[in-house]
Amino acid sequence: MIDFTVPPELDEVRKRVRAFVEDVILPAESEVDEAAFDDVLERLRKQAREAGLWTPHLPEEWGGLGLGPLGMALVSQECGASYLASLALNAMAPDEGNMHLLLHAGTDAQKEQYLRPLAAAEVRSCFAMTERAAGADPTMLATRAVADGDEWVIDGEKWFISGAAGAAFAIVVAVTDPDAENRFARHSLFLVDADNPGWQVIREIPVMGTEGPGGHCEVRLESCRVPAEAMLGEWGMGLGLAQVRLGPARLAHAMRWIGVAQR
Image 1 (cartoon, one colour):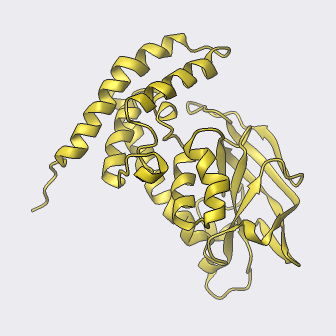
Image 2: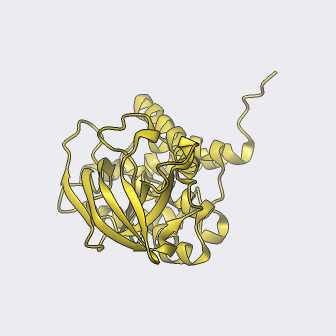
Image 3: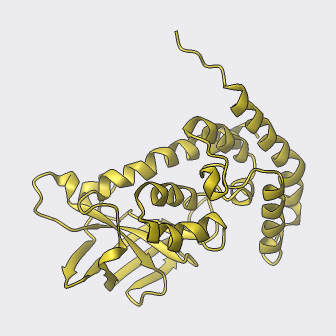
């Protein structure tokens, strides 16, 4: 028999998040307009830190609560009640998933350069995987990364890249071994800084219902050169590592939508 009882320590966190959303987040919604958004969010994030609810998905040594998938599912459900809640806790997409991936696959240097400012909400990031022609099949992704000395040169287009406008960096999925017999071993991940001249955010694509900081963007990578140490994780492990990121992210999105429906 399956026991669906929520562990008491996780239920306590869930109740704290619910109270924070009801008492702090929901009243703040009426204050938000285009001019005041950043000020309101900065205040809410300060209050989230003071409430001990900051970056709940990260380990304690990174300033978080160390919650696993079940704990984050409960937190995400409560955060679904307001579009401000995940932002206030620094547990919003796409940054939450990118933090998880960097923690899992990043070198010490990559964690210091990219994870630490994300954990402090000093920057935003994006995950550049989706392409127009690939649909839901990641093996159809066409963006290429070609080795050139001690650099990689990335070329391709990305589509509906959430948070890309204004992001400090991207995690890019690109083909590195198009002839690999195992089609799931043809891709690798790369960290690309937004000030790289080969990284271009073309436009924010209009969508219905899920606007957030940075929009959902069309992006072009054109002769985008990155150093060898920009590869995140092992060569050829891009799709496997993407699932390390996307699995928990799908759960978080689903639980947030339950929270939306409950409200």
